[in-house]
Amino acid sequence: MKTRAMLLAAALALLTASRALAAQAAGGVAVTPEMRRAMQGSIEQDCLKKEADFARQGYSKAQVAAICRCAAQQTSALLNSQTVSHILTHGAMPEEMQRKVASATGGCIKSSRQLKQ
Image (cartoon, one colour):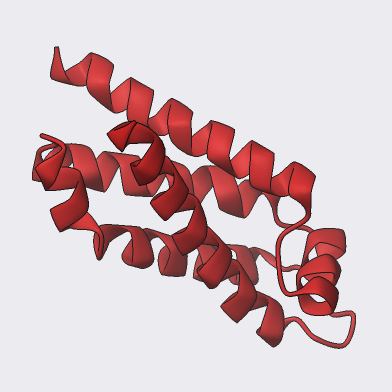
């Protein structure tokens, strides 16, 4: 149950970062590699701010960094002009993207656990 809460918290952090980047992409601007990198960095930093929550779950600092880096990479890879447009219009990621982000973040956490053992 706590892992699910962590997953939700990570997904919400990703959504927040997506909104910030989407605001920069207003006006039908194509998603550039620079935008993708900026989003990835923003997502990773937002995730790292939740380090204390991860630590309470028993994750080491190195694991948290790996989880955040992985989740940020996975999420930024999903960003395209359609998702940016949807975020700008509806204020949230499309449901399908939310599912993909949650799944990817869960995979990052699971991978981190396997490294822990």
